[in-house]
Amino acid sequence: MSRALPIAAAVAVLSHPSFALACSSCMDPREGNRTLLSVTVFLSLLPLALMGGIGGWLYRRHLAVERALLAASPPAPSTER
Amino acid sequence: MTTAALPLPKPVKGPPLVTSEVFGMLIWVFAEVMLFAGFISGYNLVGARAPAGWWPPPGDPALPVASTAAASLALLASGVAVWWAGRPASRAAAGRALGIAVVLALVFVGYQVAEFARLLAIGFTLVSSAHGGFFYTIIGAHALHAVSAVVALGWGWRKLSNGTLSEPLFAALRIYWFFVVLLWPVLFTVVYL
Image (tube, rainbow over all chains, first blue to last red; front, side, top):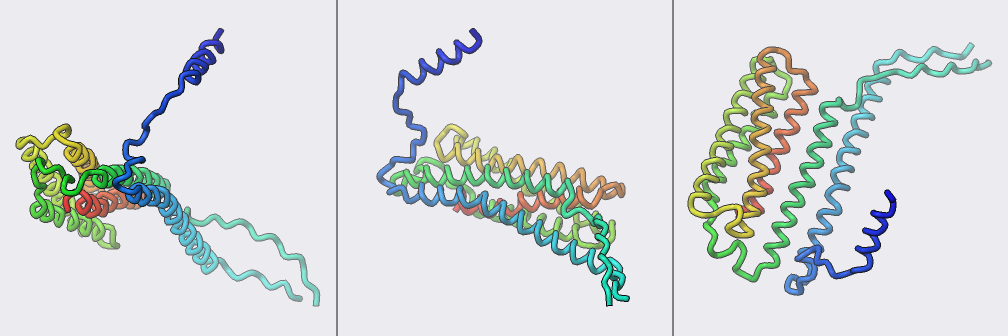
C-alpha cells in the first residue's frame, strides 16, 4: 500500500506528457543563441576555475610546508661504516 | 663498505595546510561566486533578448552612476584598509586600520540605503520592470552581503581590541570582505554601465 501510491502518481504523470518551456530564453532566434552560449561557457568554466584555483593554492601551500619541514629537520645520520 | 637498512622516517606532523576557518570561508565564497554568476548570467540573457534600445526599459529611471562610483571608492578604500590591517604590524595599528575599514564600509552601505530609498520613492521597485527586479535582486544581494560583512568586521574589530581575535578567524574575515569588495566592480560594470 505504501508503494502503490507513489507508483500510481508516477504512472499518472508519465502518461500525460506535455511540453514544458523550462527556459524562456533558450530558443529565442533573435539572439542567435550567442549570449546563451557565452553564458553557458561562463557558468561551466567558472566552477572549474574556482576549484582549480583553490586546488592550486593548496598544492603551493603543501610544497611550501614541505620545504619548510625539510629545512627544519636535522640531517639524516650517515649509514656508511 | 656495507650499508645498513635505512630506518623508515617517522612521519613528521607539520602545520596544517589551511585552517578550518579559512577553508570554510573559501567554500562559502565559492558558493557565493556561483550565486552572483547566476544573477549576472540571467541579467545578461534577459538584456540580450530585449529589442535594441529596450534594455534597460526606456521608462525606468537612469541609475545614479557618478554618485555610486564615488561610493564605490569608499568600498575599495575599505578593502585596502582591511588588507593593511592584515599585514604584520602592531595590534594598535591593525585595530586602527580595521576601524577605518568599518567606517568606510558603513559609508558605502549608508549610501546604498539612501539610493534604494530614492529609487523606490520615484517608483522604481522590485516589480516595476524586469530591470527593477534584477537591480534589487543583484545589488540588494550584494548590499546584504556588505551589511553582514560590516557586522562581521565590527565584531572582529572588537575582538582585535580585546586581544582575542585569532589569526585564522581574522584571515577568514578578510577573505569575506575581499570577496564583497572585489565583487562590487563587476556588478557595477554589469548593472550600472
